Length: 270
Image (tube, rainbow, N blue to C red):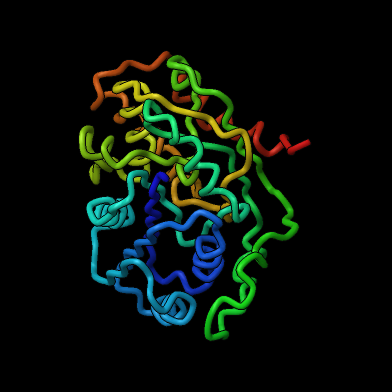
């Protein structure tokens, strides 16, 4: 059976971490859970302690940002496959990791990804955090008002040139791939996940499998989209992601990337 490690980077995530923890604990396919905390000064560590008294691994110390934390988690992971679930995200059903494990039964598959739903911030923190443990491990499976639906679709080696990328929280990678091709570049800012997937999928051409279902739910928002200045900076870093990999985008590639999000607000699952 394919073993899976899930890494969660946290920092002052008391408002959302309970749903994240519960969604991992409710999985029918067990996983090693590694929590890398950036020395939170709110109730994050207390909630982690109450809801997961014995996490697979918990480290709380100052770091150099979320991607530094993710790299620490990757270095500690012992699973054959590694996934990353942010502190304000959660798996869409208890069978997500089972579907991922199934995809990796083929030894040629090096990574997999799926679809993602954005839900309102108002839907956060619904787990009863004042309990001594997880009372109902499937209570996170409920109706949500979907704000945006990111349907990934099948990957081809021309996809990135048309502004495509898979949602990073749904991206699972064999540990051996990280060991061979490297982890997140800390000099890429908010484009570190884009650069990583560009490097692995387009430059190194590892074999990918698309799971055509929603794997993760994410709260609306994001540092790269908060302001026009942030979006312009993100666009510059996206361009640099191509440059550092010796790749050349089409003239419209980096314009198409943010424009693809517009359709995600209009798309809903049938």
